[in-house]
Image (cartoon, rainbow, N blue to C red; front, top):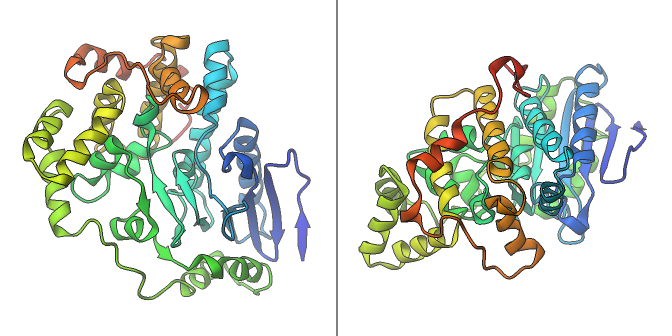
Amino acid sequence: MTNHVPAVEPFVTAEIRGRVGCLTLNRPQALNALSLAMIRRLSETLLAWRDNPVVLAVALRGMGKDGPFGAFCAGGDIRFFHQAALADDPALDAFFTEEYRLDHLIHTYAKPCIAFMDGIVMGGGMGISQGASLRVVTERSKVAMPETAIGLFPDVGGGYFLSRLPGHLGDYLALTGRVLTGAEALAIGLADAYIESARLPGLWESLGQTPFESGEAVQRWCESHAQKHPPRADAFGAAERQRIDAVFALGSVQAMVAALEAAGDDWSASTATALRQRSPLMLHVALEQIRRARGLGLADDLRMERDLVQRCFHLRPGAASETVEGIRALAIDKDHAPRWQPAAIEQVTPDQVAAFFVSPWSTDLHPLRELT
């Protein structure tokens, strides 16, 4: 039995196949980057399926030309961010409020949720996958939170899930934006299972044809198809983990870069170079975010991130925004020469960072006040 839900717009396909609610992100020309309409479609469908006794579990995938499931989701629609920020479009504020609510819904969903993280899984794609009860990666997975490269910070609950990684891996990934393979994501706890991508289409089809008795049975069945001995991640061995912890436990971004630049080895030099290319201001903000998030639950972390993203676009509005400038350089003009303000890591002041952490709203008026 396949029950097609009428499509509000074509970028998200929602259907109940057997006893499983199946969601497909289908905006391949944008690597399934999330629009506000897609966020609303996902939220409405998940809320409807949460209360539908026919649906035992939910499965989420991407679609595209490359590989079986294309890209999972490359993030939020940053071109829209740029356009909306310059036009002072209130849809920009709605986007982040509703995206973070969707992320919270997935983290707290009452039924098993299986995310097939094939292909690119970055930014907003991490937001809608990290809360899933089963996170499946493949040999095609490219997993990252690269926001500091566009003058943003690892949002969508990034503070929550990165800060809970072993040691100081979360600080490292938040600042550098390093892209992980599926095996690397699995090794450090950003995924739960590894399946070869060629097996995904058959698995997806079988979801609608298998007579499941419970949501837990759906998840166990998916887990049973995972490789028992997934490829070993070459990265994040004991030696690299020790280096990461030694550097990224330091008290400031300045201290980290100074230590890296003084070390004289290739890993330290390349890591320092990566940091020097990112927004100096947002490196400081992201480090503070991760360190505060270690002591916060999910709802409070998302409220903090909603404050931060409001400051990203409105503290210095329009073209003066660090985020607008970062997107301009990467995706609009594509000159890859952002004019960061301040221009150097050493020029960022504590007051500039602290301003991001002052909420624009009182507690009772916060747009995410209802999250628990």
